[in-house]
Image 1 (spheres, rainbow, N blue to C red):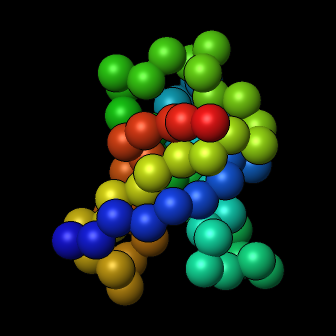
Image 2: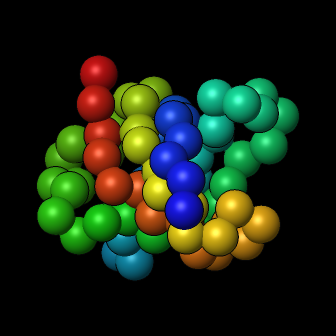
Length: 70
C-alpha cells in the first residue's frame, strides 16, 4: 500500500469518482478513481490537492482519494 499526492482535475458526484493527476506524472491522469464517501462533494473542487491511497500500485482501479487539502 502506498500514499501519493495529486491534483483533482474533475469530480463526478453521481458515482463519487474523480480524475486525478499525480504529482509524479504530469502527462498521465487517473480516471474513475473512487472517492471516500466521508469527503463532502462541496470540497471536491478542481485544482485542489488530494491524497490518494493505492492498495495495489500496479492497478489504478485499486486507488481511493482519501483526503482533499489546500
